[in-house]
Structure formats: structure tokens, C-alpha cells
Image (cartoon, rainbow, N blue to C red; front, side):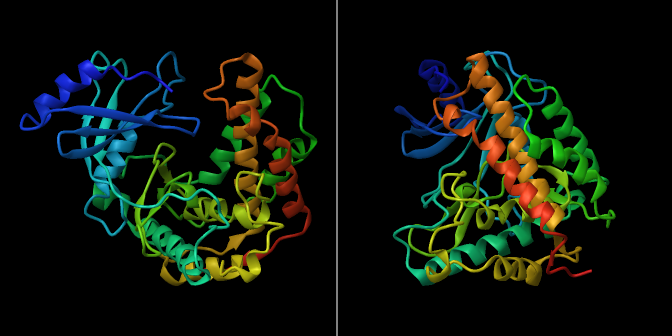
Length: 343
């Protein structure tokens, strides 16, 4: 976690909210990316999110993009925190940052939703599907972000990007990933022209639920957002049904069937019941999501070997590259399946 210059931040906040005083800041631990703090300034409860200290890759950790998409969605029916100020001058606290309102709610990373009633588990999952459908229904040009990414040929470009990143890895080759680099382009569905705001990391742990009710009050962590295909988010969001608890919090191998958690089929059906017309979810989309995550874990493993991993958690995540690649290979070898679809 980066350090936060409280003296500099206090002076900055005094200009934004001169009627307040008294600063406290509590770091939010966990994650691999942008350092985040709960900030209290007088009676205002805020969240500050900044780029990490030190050199970063061009375009990475783009808090400016996060701020832009949060602002664009403020008046939509997608629940997001209210973004207040973006500061691009890195002389204030060392890097660009933005500040948003703090919301009170529950963030639960364990996809089995322990200590939740079966009825609420069921509704929380279905509300995640509905929230994703509402996000994909927002027309980017109508909220001022029509230039937020490159439309069209999304999966083709993404396969190329992640295959290239894997090829540049300094680590050992992973046979299942080598197979997927060949299989994915050969099984690419015909482009249906679908373009939406794609969150890029739409999962349970990035949802904030109401303190007591089974409904989402905010979608968090928009760092990977862009314009993309809606089925990329949907394929990513159903990964827990194909991964185990020690594989980044999946539900496979747990007694989830009797816990209130809906089946993958019911979750996807709920999404399509509220989605804009789009093609069916296919095995390709699930395999692609697992492939993408496997390459992300390859990158984490590279950073662990180089000694510059972002957190101690990285060493535990690095071995997941091979396991996620194998999960994707399993799906690929089971043959093409489809779920839902409104085209």
C-alpha cells in the first residue's frame, strides 16, 4: 500500500470543503491495483482512490477513466458511488487521484455467501445478473463516453492482446494455455456487433450490497472498464460455477445447490430477461474469461519472481494461472454449449 501525504491532502480538502476540518484516513487492504482509503473530513465520509507510487505501464491504473465512467453513470439506473473530484496534478500527493462519496453496505468476496439466508443468497445473485443487464443497456454515446473504447471485433482484439502478453512472460510455458492460444481464435463466434460498457471485473466481490437487504447499491472498481462486448462480462461473472473456493473464490465442489444460490442456467436466464438483445452465451465466452484470468495470473507470477509484486497476496495468486487454464481447457474440450440469448 502506498503512503498517503495527509498534510497535503488536508490542504487540498480544505479548498474543496472549507466548512469542514479534521482529517482521518484508513487504508482499504487487499487487491492488486489502485490504493484506496476511507477518508473522513469533518462530517464528510469519503473514499480516495489513487494510482500506485512508482513507475507504471502506460495506460495502467487509470483512475481518470474510473472517474469518467462513474460520472457518466451517475444519472443512470446503474448503482455507482457519486464521484466528486478528480485531481490530475501529481504534485499534490504524488500521483493522480479521485474522491467519491462513501456508501454504507456489505462487500462479500466469498461466493458461497456464508451467514446469509438461502432466500437472500438467491436474490443477491439474481440482482447481480439484473444489475449487469442494466449496465449493458446503457448506450455509451448517450452518457458521453462513446469514445471510451474501440467498438467491434472485441474478442478478436482481446485474444490477440492476452496471447501476446502470455508470449512475453518470462515464466515456464503452461500446456493448457498454449492450447487455448490456438483454440480461441479457431472457435471465435461471428461478431454480432454488440457493444456496451464492459466493466471488465464484474464479480460478487466488486458489488456493494445494502446493509440488510439483498440488493446492490453500488458497482465498484471500474479500472478495467471499456467499451466491449456484453458477453465478456457475463462469461466472466459465471466463472464461480466452474472454479473451486481456493481458485479465487469459486463455488464448484461446495454444497451450493442446496444453499439458495441459483444455477448457472437460472443466473444467465435472469440476465437475458433484462438484457438488450444479444447473442447466446457460449462455451467460448466462458473459456475466454478463464483464459484472460489465467494470463493475468501469469503476469502476477512474473512479478513475484522479479520481486516487485504489489502485495503479499500475489504469491498465493500466482499458481492459479495453470489451474484457470485447465478449467478453460475443460470447457473447450466438452464441446460447444449455449445458454440464453435474445437474438
